[in-house]
Image (cartoon, rainbow, N blue to C red; front, top):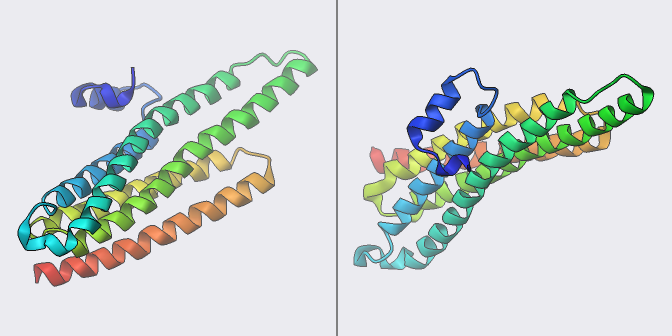
Length: 209
């Protein structure tokens, strides 16, 4: 069953148990989905309010994008667990003969790349979420400004958590071109998140002063 369809209590019980998954990657995905839901709420509480008519078009676009990202984040929650399980299965492959060792090494490399790609995609999704949180703070109903600010905080935390998982998975990959490209994507996404969260914080300071 998809993690997104579990009850909150079931997810938290599994997270707190000695099960190897779900873990930090799933939490990052959940955090991002929560951020997206907050952004959608801000947008939905803006569109249709006559007082904010000038921003209806912007916020209608924001809610459409935030809902797309929310669905993607939930899908990545499952992909994070599945990619981890695939890597663990590769670790258990036989290694008695040279042929088995070669097959195992190949599968480990393939599944390690998959395990790195899941949180990397999550991180890039966090960057898009942080940008939407900024738009929500700037153009959304000011009565929901703290929700937009909270969305930015969740996106930033989720992005950092995802980056940790990217880094640990890249450490076991031998393909230097892959690791270099992934590292560049990671740093670029982190920079985008930091920039947009800083701008959101500045917007929040103006609203809440």
